[in-house]
Amino acid sequence: MNAGPPSTEVLRAAAASLPRLPRLADDPGGPLLVGVSGGADSVYLLLALSADEAFAGRLVVAHFDHRVRGRASAADAEFVAALCASLGVPCRLGSRASEGPASEGALRDAREAFFASVRADAGSAVLVTAHHVDDVVETVLLRLARGAGPGGLGSPRVRRRFRDGHVRWRPLVAAGLRKRDLAQALIAARVTWREDATNALPVTARNRVRSWVGGGADAALGEGHAAGFALSARILAESHDALLAWARELGCVPGSDSLDLAGLRARPAALAYAVLAEHLRLLSGTDASPQSLAPVVAAALEGGEGRFSLCGRVHRLRAGRLSLSAEPAAWGVTPRPLRLGVPDPECGLLAETVDVDEALWRALSGGVISNTEEVYLRSPATGLVWRGRAEGDRCRPLGAPGGAKLSDLLINRKLPEESRDSLPVVLAGDEILWVPGIPPSDAHRLDGPCGGALRLTWPPGRLVWLVR
Image (cartoon, rainbow, N blue to C red):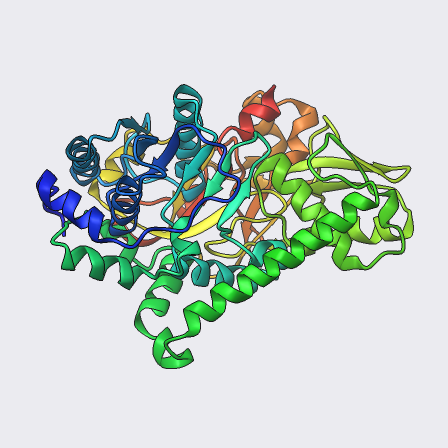
């Protein structure tokens, strides 16, 4: 449904016909920033909020153009601006500086920076997003596959506060609404919306799970499965909160620069996992896996000490206190598997299978996309692993006449010696495919547009942090 927005009369009649959404607990008042992409979910959300006397007059819409889909992305922004004009709601538009495909992490970081800027300008303490119950199902399934604990499985929450003080509110989850409920209501009200065709492409794990949830989950699990997932997520979130409340009673408060873990000694491991997961989420915005937390948990329960790499940064545990260190992480030479579609919890590397179309190929061959933080390669036949650099590592970067020592390549790139062990080395078998900071392997170079290419990305800005 990629037509323009309907008339003001149709929109207001539709808004008035929609059920009122649950109220925001502990509403701080003031402006409400609403993220609107133009899809059915966010259009429904905006209409429902605009007709509610508790929220009307407080709404400010934020739309971010990721500039991934060319003219279609620009048309989304035009649609949202026209929709807001018809409803009389202020609209702030933003866009990514560069154009063309990018990693999910890069897109998310650019979007979050825009939302933070608009929140500050509007004086808003609340960001309202259009997550619904199907998003909860997808998230639970994806995180179960990663071995997440109750904090991770209890997301996305109806209401969640972040370290900077702002609140994310998801009223469609609170209302128990599914994607089909939203679309059916808009169709009945003769309201159009924008469709992002990339959401249907099986290039990310979430898209593949979404396809299964939409196409076969009802038949496999019964039509009530989504409500069951949402209930389980809520119970797990409340269990996580109960563990954190217990931790605070023991003097352990996540999110502080120096976390006191002394009170966790000899306590249940689940308590330590909950505290550390919440602590890292508040510090870095990253969900750490239980596997990466296991060594810290063991040391905390036994009253031990140590140095740990968590979410790409070094933390030191001394005298029962965990502190963030300024030193770079050092990964060691033990290979770890690199799973497709899931950011590595230790170093942040992300491997994905993508299609390289003509537009993306032009950007790659023209040097528009830096190949030091994001690379595209022919997919290797063997599985991917990563580790830190090892003595004797050699590789042949893109366009180089022959192989060279990795240590020499890093020196030539002027990367500080103390930072070089913080660079993950991606391998297929014994062959080095890529090290952030230098171009990728020439042996796996792309020669033009193709399907099923391998995209490797490292979190934007990480390399800059190391150089500093």
